[in-house]
Image (cartoon, rainbow, N blue to C red; front, side, top):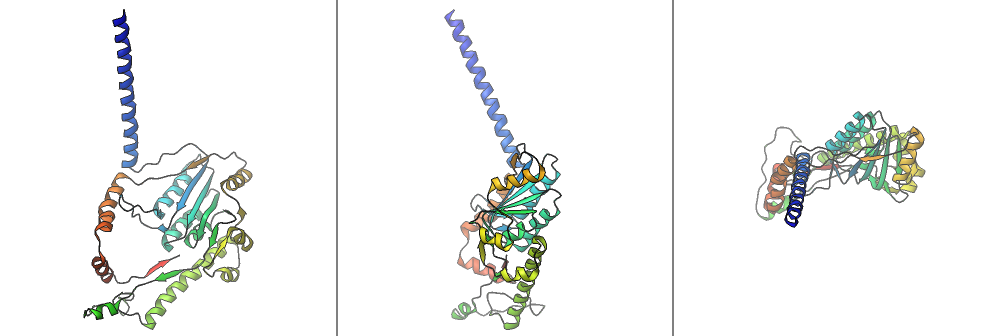
Length: 314
């Protein structure tokens, strides 16, 4: 009798182990497939939360060796579109914590928000500055903490040049170009006054676009925006006084606004997309290895080969 009971317990343990192995296998398979094909795992809810965290860029440079912490515009736009197409989603909260970045990337996200047929609340956490505020402007309502950093309406560009370094080592810079300004911004030559004026005109154009963008979406006069568009940042409290922010508060305030306007009980669902296995692998090869192995000489050569080192940010 004892032996039979022992065998029964053994079979129970064996079956339990088999069941556990199968469960782990299917769980790991699901995770692997999600990673492999860049799928999103979404909880049920009626309000989508889409985070924008870090500098805004148009392309991902994520890898195992060089984690980015970047807000990739194409991924964020894709999330907004998915929320727009999801019949369960009644409203969207754009959770912003960004100092800005690419003018193109910022505008891509802002355009997706502007085109959304669903109510959009922009929630500025620590920072919604420059391109981060460009993104927030088209939202139906902007909420910020009283101590959030908001604004920085302006455009910045920088470039490097080291022609004296070449002279020091008796190196001559020779470059053949077709087009008077083709090599403007090359670090191997000093920038002339007319070339600098060209760059400044480009920045002025983007600056005027920024002012028009804010004036249009915040329903302010362009001259009014221009007065506060010094490139400086404001606290959430001051930003509200200036008309850059509608309400002070955090996520609870954003939920409160949606519940009030739509007469619903908010159930949040965060739209998170992780880079696929192939994206990580590609990033590792293309970015990570380069970051590990590059030296000063290679960096200088790379810059020299580029027509310009100018970087425009907002």
